Length: 374
Ligand SMILES: Cc1ncc(COP(=O)(O)O)c(C=O)c1O
Image (cartoon, rainbow, N blue to C red; front, side):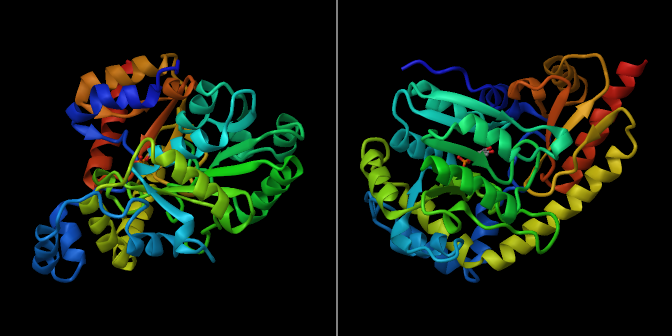
Protein backbone atom coordinates (compact mmCIF):
# COMPACT_ATOMS: atom_id res chain seq x y z
CA UNK A 1 0.00 0.00 0.00
CA UNK A 2 1.57 3.29 -1.08
CA UNK A 3 1.10 6.45 0.97
CA UNK A 4 2.50 9.96 0.61
CA UNK A 5 4.81 11.27 3.36
CA UNK A 6 3.01 12.87 6.31
CA UNK A 7 4.70 16.26 6.09
CA UNK A 8 3.83 17.70 9.50
CA UNK A 9 4.78 14.52 11.37
CA UNK A 10 8.10 14.30 9.49
CA UNK A 11 8.81 17.92 10.34
CA UNK A 12 8.03 17.35 14.03
CA UNK A 13 10.04 14.13 14.16
CA UNK A 14 13.18 15.72 12.74
CA UNK A 15 13.36 18.78 14.96
CA UNK A 16 11.00 18.84 17.91
CA UNK A 17 13.18 17.15 20.52
CA UNK A 18 16.06 19.57 19.97
CA UNK A 19 13.92 22.72 20.02
CA UNK A 20 14.74 25.40 22.56
CA UNK A 21 11.36 27.13 22.31
CA UNK A 22 8.75 24.69 21.06
CA UNK A 23 5.83 26.62 19.61
CA UNK A 24 5.26 23.94 16.98
CA UNK A 25 3.38 21.36 18.99
CA UNK A 26 -0.32 21.45 19.63
CA UNK A 27 -1.05 20.23 23.16
CA UNK A 28 -1.92 22.50 26.06
CA UNK A 29 1.26 22.48 28.19
CA UNK A 30 1.58 18.77 29.05
CA UNK A 31 1.24 17.43 32.59
CA UNK A 32 3.86 15.49 34.49
CA UNK A 33 2.84 12.16 36.00
CA UNK A 34 3.06 13.77 39.43
CA UNK A 35 0.71 16.58 38.40
CA UNK A 36 -1.74 14.06 37.03
CA UNK A 37 -1.66 11.84 40.12
CA UNK A 38 -2.16 14.91 42.32
CA UNK A 39 -5.44 15.54 40.49
CA UNK A 40 -6.76 12.29 41.94
CA UNK A 41 -6.77 13.90 45.39
CA UNK A 42 -4.63 11.09 46.84
CA UNK A 43 -1.55 10.52 44.71
CA UNK A 44 -0.13 7.76 46.93
CA UNK A 45 -3.34 5.74 46.82
CA UNK A 46 -3.62 6.21 43.05
CA UNK A 47 -0.04 5.05 42.58
CA UNK A 48 -0.57 2.05 44.86
CA UNK A 49 -3.56 0.99 42.73
CA UNK A 50 -1.42 1.16 39.61
CA UNK A 51 1.40 -0.79 41.25
CA UNK A 52 -0.96 -3.59 42.17
CA UNK A 53 -2.41 -3.96 38.69
CA UNK A 54 -1.79 -7.20 36.84
CA UNK A 55 -0.73 -6.18 33.36
CA UNK A 56 -3.03 -8.19 31.13
CA UNK A 57 -4.58 -7.00 27.87
CA UNK A 58 -7.40 -5.59 29.96
CA UNK A 59 -10.80 -4.86 28.46
CA UNK A 60 -10.42 -5.28 24.71
CA UNK A 61 -12.71 -2.41 23.63
CA UNK A 62 -11.67 -0.12 26.49
CA UNK A 63 -12.22 -0.33 30.25
CA UNK A 64 -15.96 0.33 30.94
CA UNK A 65 -15.43 3.26 33.35
CA UNK A 66 -13.32 5.05 30.74
CA UNK A 67 -15.87 4.50 27.98
CA UNK A 68 -18.57 5.78 30.32
CA UNK A 69 -16.60 8.97 31.11
CA UNK A 70 -15.77 9.57 27.44
CA UNK A 71 -19.42 9.13 26.45
CA UNK A 72 -20.28 12.00 28.79
CA UNK A 73 -18.66 14.47 26.41
CA UNK A 74 -21.58 13.82 24.03
CA UNK A 75 -25.17 14.78 24.67
CA UNK A 76 -26.81 11.38 24.83
CA UNK A 77 -24.46 8.59 23.90
CA UNK A 78 -24.30 5.11 25.46
CA UNK A 79 -20.83 4.09 26.68
CA UNK A 80 -20.91 1.18 24.22
CA UNK A 81 -20.80 3.67 21.34
CA UNK A 82 -17.26 4.72 22.31
CA UNK A 83 -14.18 2.71 21.44
CA UNK A 84 -10.73 3.58 22.80
CA UNK A 85 -7.77 3.84 20.44
CA UNK A 86 -4.04 4.62 20.54
CA UNK A 87 -4.52 8.37 20.19
CA UNK A 88 -6.84 10.15 17.82
CA UNK A 89 -4.43 9.28 15.06
CA UNK A 90 -5.52 5.64 15.39
CA UNK A 91 -9.14 6.70 15.78
CA UNK A 92 -9.03 8.60 12.48
CA UNK A 93 -7.26 5.73 10.78
CA UNK A 94 -9.75 3.22 12.14
CA UNK A 95 -12.74 5.29 11.06
CA UNK A 96 -11.43 5.61 7.51
CA UNK A 97 -10.17 2.01 7.38
CA UNK A 98 -13.70 0.95 8.31
CA UNK A 99 -15.77 3.34 6.20
CA UNK A 100 -13.80 3.86 2.97
CA UNK A 101 -13.52 1.47 0.05
CA UNK A 102 -11.65 1.84 -3.25
CA UNK A 103 -13.55 4.06 -5.67
CA UNK A 104 -15.55 5.86 -2.95
CA UNK A 105 -15.83 9.62 -3.14
CA UNK A 106 -14.46 11.33 -0.04
CA UNK A 107 -14.56 15.09 0.51
CA UNK A 108 -12.22 16.59 3.09
CA UNK A 109 -11.44 20.13 4.15
CA UNK A 110 -7.92 21.54 3.80
CA UNK A 111 -5.73 22.83 5.37
CA UNK A 112 -6.08 20.24 8.09
CA UNK A 113 -4.30 17.29 9.66
CA UNK A 114 -3.01 15.58 6.53
CA UNK A 115 -3.91 12.10 7.73
CA UNK A 116 -7.58 12.90 7.22
CA UNK A 117 -7.27 13.05 3.43
CA UNK A 118 -4.05 11.11 2.67
CA UNK A 119 -5.28 7.89 4.32
CA UNK A 120 -8.51 7.56 2.27
CA UNK A 121 -6.49 8.39 -0.83
CA UNK A 122 -4.15 5.50 0.00
CA UNK A 123 -7.18 3.20 0.24
CA UNK A 124 -8.05 4.03 -3.37
CA UNK A 125 -10.81 6.54 -2.71
CA UNK A 126 -11.28 9.55 -4.96
CA UNK A 127 -10.55 12.43 -2.58
CA UNK A 128 -11.74 15.96 -3.28
CA UNK A 129 -10.41 18.78 -1.13
CA UNK A 130 -12.53 21.67 0.04
CA UNK A 131 -10.15 24.60 0.53
CA UNK A 132 -10.82 26.78 3.57
CA UNK A 133 -10.04 30.41 2.84
CA UNK A 134 -9.02 33.23 5.17
CA UNK A 135 -11.62 35.54 3.58
CA UNK A 136 -14.29 33.08 4.84
CA UNK A 137 -12.67 32.97 8.29
CA UNK A 138 -11.42 29.50 7.25
CA UNK A 139 -14.96 28.12 7.44
CA UNK A 140 -16.22 25.63 4.85
CA UNK A 141 -18.37 27.07 2.08
CA UNK A 142 -21.47 24.87 2.15
CA UNK A 143 -22.38 25.39 -1.52
CA UNK A 144 -18.89 24.43 -2.55
CA UNK A 145 -19.10 21.37 -0.30
CA UNK A 146 -22.42 20.42 -1.91
CA UNK A 147 -20.82 20.69 -5.36
CA UNK A 148 -17.83 18.54 -4.39
CA UNK A 149 -19.99 15.93 -2.66
CA UNK A 150 -22.02 15.72 -5.85
CA UNK A 151 -24.89 13.79 -4.26
CA UNK A 152 -22.71 10.66 -4.01
CA UNK A 153 -19.96 11.21 -1.46
CA UNK A 154 -19.49 8.25 0.86
CA UNK A 155 -17.68 10.28 3.49
CA UNK A 156 -17.30 13.95 4.34
CA UNK A 157 -14.42 14.81 6.68
CA UNK A 158 -14.10 17.95 8.76
CA UNK A 159 -11.86 18.99 11.64
CA UNK A 160 -13.68 21.11 14.18
CA UNK A 161 -12.06 23.14 15.72
CA UNK A 162 -9.55 23.19 12.90
CA UNK A 163 -5.82 22.57 13.01
CA UNK A 164 -4.01 24.72 11.83
CA UNK A 165 -6.37 27.70 11.52
CA UNK A 166 -8.22 27.64 14.86
CA UNK A 167 -11.53 28.12 13.02
CA UNK A 168 -14.65 26.98 14.84
CA UNK A 169 -17.72 25.81 12.93
CA UNK A 170 -20.79 26.74 14.97
CA UNK A 171 -23.99 24.73 15.40
CA UNK A 172 -25.94 26.35 12.57
CA UNK A 173 -23.10 25.90 10.12
CA UNK A 174 -22.60 22.30 11.28
CA UNK A 175 -26.28 21.65 10.68
CA UNK A 176 -25.91 22.91 7.10
CA UNK A 177 -22.98 20.53 6.60
CA UNK A 178 -25.05 17.69 8.05
CA UNK A 179 -27.75 18.54 5.49
CA UNK A 180 -25.23 18.07 2.65
CA UNK A 181 -24.11 14.75 4.14
CA UNK A 182 -27.73 13.63 4.46
CA UNK A 183 -28.46 14.47 0.82
CA UNK A 184 -25.68 12.01 -0.13
CA UNK A 185 -26.41 9.54 2.68
CA UNK A 186 -22.73 10.07 3.53
CA UNK A 187 -20.97 9.53 6.82
CA UNK A 188 -19.70 12.72 8.41
CA UNK A 189 -16.40 12.21 10.21
CA UNK A 190 -15.34 15.08 12.46
CA UNK A 191 -11.91 15.08 14.03
CA UNK A 192 -12.85 16.86 17.25
CA UNK A 193 -9.59 16.62 19.18
CA UNK A 194 -9.68 20.36 19.93
CA UNK A 195 -13.35 20.46 20.96
CA UNK A 196 -13.69 22.00 24.42
CA UNK A 197 -10.83 24.44 23.75
CA UNK A 198 -12.96 27.43 22.78
CA UNK A 199 -11.40 30.80 23.50
CA UNK A 200 -14.56 32.64 24.39
CA UNK A 201 -16.68 31.17 27.17
CA UNK A 202 -20.06 29.95 25.96
CA UNK A 203 -19.00 29.20 22.38
CA UNK A 204 -18.70 25.42 22.74
CA UNK A 205 -20.27 23.62 19.78
CA UNK A 206 -21.93 20.22 19.59
CA UNK A 207 -20.29 17.10 18.23
CA UNK A 208 -21.47 15.75 14.88
CA UNK A 209 -22.49 12.64 16.83
CA UNK A 210 -25.18 14.74 18.51
CA UNK A 211 -26.39 16.25 15.25
CA UNK A 212 -26.42 13.44 12.71
CA UNK A 213 -27.36 9.76 12.71
CA UNK A 214 -24.28 9.02 10.55
CA UNK A 215 -21.95 11.35 12.44
CA UNK A 216 -18.65 9.92 13.69
CA UNK A 217 -16.42 11.81 16.10
CA UNK A 218 -12.79 11.27 17.06
CA UNK A 219 -11.26 12.66 20.22
CA UNK A 220 -8.12 12.50 22.28
CA UNK A 221 -6.55 12.87 25.70
CA UNK A 222 -3.62 14.68 24.03
CA UNK A 223 -4.76 18.27 23.52
CA UNK A 224 -7.67 19.16 25.79
CA UNK A 225 -6.32 17.10 28.70
CA UNK A 226 -2.57 17.71 28.12
CA UNK A 227 -1.78 14.00 28.13
CA UNK A 228 -0.35 13.12 24.72
CA UNK A 229 2.04 10.71 26.44
CA UNK A 230 -0.85 8.40 27.29
CA UNK A 231 -1.43 7.81 23.57
CA UNK A 232 -5.14 7.48 24.17
CA UNK A 233 -7.93 8.59 21.90
CA UNK A 234 -11.38 7.39 20.98
CA UNK A 235 -13.96 7.06 18.30
CA UNK A 236 -17.65 7.66 18.97
CA UNK A 237 -20.55 7.10 16.63
CA UNK A 238 -23.61 5.09 15.70
CA UNK A 239 -23.76 1.52 17.08
CA UNK A 240 -23.37 -0.19 13.68
CA UNK A 241 -20.30 1.90 12.79
CA UNK A 242 -18.71 1.25 16.18
CA UNK A 243 -19.38 -2.50 15.84
CA UNK A 244 -17.74 -2.45 12.42
CA UNK A 245 -14.81 -0.40 13.74
CA UNK A 246 -14.39 -2.94 16.50
CA UNK A 247 -13.98 -5.71 13.94
CA UNK A 248 -11.33 -3.70 12.10
CA UNK A 249 -9.67 -2.73 15.37
CA UNK A 250 -9.10 -6.37 16.33
CA UNK A 251 -6.57 -6.52 13.48
CA UNK A 252 -4.57 -3.48 14.58
CA UNK A 253 -4.88 -2.84 18.30
CA UNK A 254 -6.24 -5.68 20.46
CA UNK A 255 -6.54 -3.24 23.37
CA UNK A 256 -5.07 0.01 24.64
CA UNK A 257 -2.58 0.08 27.52
CA UNK A 258 -4.18 -0.66 30.89
CA UNK A 259 -2.02 1.90 32.72
CA UNK A 260 -2.81 4.57 30.14
CA UNK A 261 -6.51 3.90 30.56
CA UNK A 262 -6.35 4.18 34.34
CA UNK A 263 -4.42 7.45 34.09
CA UNK A 264 -6.99 8.79 31.64
CA UNK A 265 -9.74 7.95 34.14
CA UNK A 266 -7.95 10.03 36.78
CA UNK A 267 -7.81 12.99 34.38
CA UNK A 268 -11.45 12.67 33.30
CA UNK A 269 -12.71 12.34 36.86
CA UNK A 270 -10.90 15.59 37.67
CA UNK A 271 -11.78 17.21 34.36
CA UNK A 272 -13.32 20.31 35.89
CA UNK A 273 -10.05 21.34 37.57
CA UNK A 274 -7.88 20.21 34.68
CA UNK A 275 -9.92 22.13 32.13
CA UNK A 276 -9.91 25.21 34.33
CA UNK A 277 -6.09 25.10 34.25
CA UNK A 278 -5.98 24.47 30.52
CA UNK A 279 -8.52 27.11 29.51
CA UNK A 280 -6.61 29.66 31.58
CA UNK A 281 -3.39 28.80 29.68
CA UNK A 282 -5.26 28.79 26.36
CA UNK A 283 -7.01 32.11 26.83
CA UNK A 284 -4.04 33.88 28.42
CA UNK A 285 -1.73 32.72 25.62
CA UNK A 286 -4.24 33.62 22.87
CA UNK A 287 -4.22 37.16 24.27
CA UNK A 288 -0.38 37.16 24.40
CA UNK A 289 -0.30 36.06 20.78
CA UNK A 290 -2.75 38.79 19.76
CA UNK A 291 -0.68 41.46 21.57
CA UNK A 292 2.46 40.30 19.82
CA UNK A 293 0.74 40.14 16.41
CA UNK A 294 -0.14 43.81 16.83
CA UNK A 295 3.60 44.59 17.05
CA UNK A 296 4.44 42.87 13.76
CA UNK A 297 2.80 44.79 10.90
CA UNK A 298 3.99 42.36 8.23
CA UNK A 299 2.22 39.40 9.85
CA UNK A 300 -1.51 38.88 9.79
CA UNK A 301 -3.97 36.16 10.76
CA UNK A 302 -7.57 35.25 11.28
CA UNK A 303 -7.56 35.15 15.08
CA UNK A 304 -8.25 31.56 16.16
CA UNK A 305 -11.58 30.99 17.94
CA UNK A 306 -10.77 27.56 19.32
CA UNK A 307 -7.96 25.05 19.63
CA UNK A 308 -4.27 25.52 20.21
CA UNK A 309 -2.97 26.60 16.82
CA UNK A 310 -2.89 29.82 14.84
CA UNK A 311 -2.11 30.10 11.16
CA UNK A 312 -0.03 33.20 10.49
CA UNK A 313 0.47 34.82 7.09
CA UNK A 314 3.70 36.72 6.51
CA UNK A 315 4.65 39.38 4.03
CA UNK A 316 8.32 38.53 3.52
CA UNK A 317 9.80 37.04 0.40
CA UNK A 318 11.09 33.79 1.88
CA UNK A 319 9.71 30.24 1.49
CA UNK A 320 8.15 28.87 4.66
CA UNK A 321 10.53 25.92 5.10
CA UNK A 322 13.53 28.25 4.82
CA UNK A 323 11.84 30.62 7.26
CA UNK A 324 11.33 27.86 9.81
CA UNK A 325 14.81 26.38 9.34
CA UNK A 326 16.62 29.70 9.62
CA UNK A 327 14.55 30.65 12.65
CA UNK A 328 15.40 27.33 14.31
CA UNK A 329 19.10 27.82 13.63
CA UNK A 330 19.11 31.43 14.81
CA UNK A 331 17.60 30.92 18.25
CA UNK A 332 16.06 27.45 18.58
CA UNK A 333 12.45 28.57 18.04
CA UNK A 334 10.53 25.68 16.56
CA UNK A 335 7.30 26.09 14.56
CA UNK A 336 5.74 24.43 11.55
CA UNK A 337 6.10 25.94 8.09
CA UNK A 338 2.89 26.41 6.12
CA UNK A 339 4.57 24.39 3.36
CA UNK A 340 3.95 21.26 5.47
CA UNK A 341 0.25 21.97 4.85
CA UNK A 342 0.81 22.96 1.22
CA UNK A 343 0.39 26.68 2.16
CA UNK A 344 3.33 28.93 1.28
CA UNK A 345 3.99 32.17 3.22
CA UNK A 346 2.12 30.76 6.20
CA UNK A 347 3.32 29.42 9.53
CA UNK A 348 1.59 27.34 12.16
CA UNK A 349 2.18 28.38 15.72
CA UNK A 350 1.11 26.13 18.57
CA UNK A 351 0.50 28.78 21.17
CA UNK A 352 -0.30 26.78 24.30
CA UNK A 353 3.02 25.74 25.80
CA UNK A 354 3.89 27.30 29.19
CA UNK A 355 3.44 31.09 28.83
CA UNK A 356 7.19 31.81 29.19
CA UNK A 357 7.95 29.41 26.32
CA UNK A 358 5.39 31.15 24.11
CA UNK A 359 6.82 34.56 25.00
CA UNK A 360 10.38 33.40 24.19
CA UNK A 361 9.26 31.77 20.94
CA UNK A 362 7.42 34.89 19.75
CA UNK A 363 10.45 37.03 20.66
CA UNK A 364 12.52 34.52 18.68
CA UNK A 365 10.34 35.07 15.60
CA UNK A 366 10.68 38.84 15.98
CA UNK A 367 14.47 38.48 16.18
CA UNK A 368 14.42 36.51 12.93
CA UNK A 369 12.11 39.00 11.20
CA UNK A 370 14.60 41.79 12.00
CA UNK A 371 17.31 39.80 10.17
CA UNK A 372 15.01 39.55 7.13
CA UNK A 373 14.53 43.30 7.21
CA UNK A 374 18.25 44.08 7.64
C1 LIG B 1 -6.40 17.42 14.13
C2 LIG B 1 -5.59 16.36 14.78
N1 LIG B 1 -6.06 15.12 14.82
C3 LIG B 1 -5.38 14.12 15.41
C4 LIG B 1 -4.15 14.35 15.99
C5 LIG B 1 -3.42 13.21 16.64
O1 LIG B 1 -3.58 13.30 18.03
P1 LIG B 1 -3.29 12.12 19.05
O2 LIG B 1 -2.17 12.58 19.90
O3 LIG B 1 -4.54 11.96 19.84
O4 LIG B 1 -2.98 10.89 18.27
C6 LIG B 1 -3.60 15.63 15.95
C7 LIG B 1 -2.26 15.90 16.52
O5 LIG B 1 -1.66 16.92 16.32
C8 LIG B 1 -4.35 16.66 15.35
O6 LIG B 1 -3.90 17.92 15.32
